[in-house]
Image (cartoon, one colour):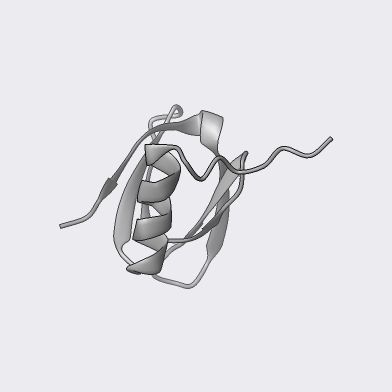
Length: 71
């Protein structure tokens, strides 16, 4: 059984736009940590964030409180 990414959802489309536009985002986690970087990919369970040091961090979607583009 495979779980497909639901591309019709507004949240999925917004994340894809942020990836395509190479925009920097801010992720607030349930641990109260704040991560900043650029999104590289998403799947049904996780999002990959790359920071200023080119360090990739895979974040579980369930750990995210909010995500917003940096201005």
